[in-house]
Amino acid sequence: MTGRQILVVEDEKSIRDMIAFGLRRAGFEVLEAEDASTARGKIADRRPDLLLVDWMLPDQSGLDLTRAIRRDKETEDLPVIMLTARAAEQDKVSGLEVGADDYLTKPFSTRELVARINAVLRRTLPGDEAGTIESGGLKMDTLGHRVTAAGEPVSLGPTEYRLLKFFMEHPERVYTRGQLLDRIWGGAVYIEERTVDVHVRRLRKALEPSGLDALVQTVRGSGYRFSARPE
Ligand code: CA
Image 1 (cartoon, rainbow, N blue to C red):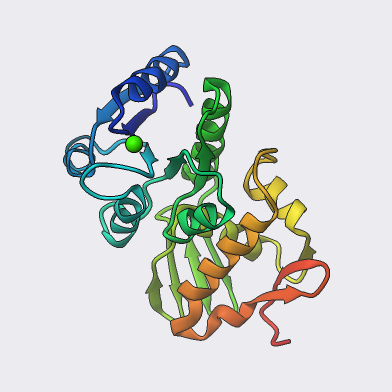
Image 2: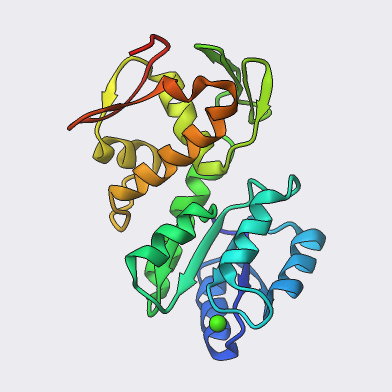
């Protein structure tokens, strides 16, 4: 994953410098922004591969910046990892709900940060295999990363795309949250099983307008199943 361009959005210069130093040593290219508006400019100019967004920024919260990135067609699939000094569970859930792909609480080691970045990049980069998968009214073009539900385009974040792709490739089977973490998040040990629920919720929400959210079924006490057959 080296050579990838990471945009670090953090107003505290000492922290930004430390992160940038660690990432450059790990082989990444680093762009820096001290606030949300600078970040937007750099995203438009340079199109980084991943964003690290601090929760507390001077002009706009990291949460609002992430939400805005997800709402913009140009940037909706840009991977985002949120950074925060607050370890509160609700913050974490809020971060994931606005569309962050992962969440890291300060202080963290460079090693942990690099592991998280690599995990997010691995699961958000286009896969090698190309083709079209169809199931239950859903159609996925794995080359163009486009999904349509009942003929209408569906806008998915990178993690939801990976999740749906996995489900469509493995229909009619129940997977536990742990198995989904292994298969979709690459077994990153830091991620809690609850994260799976957050992304499943987002995936269902994206499928809701087409009524195809029912394809993603909760199997009580076990996990999730993708099924083209109604329950
Ligand atoms: Ca800050």
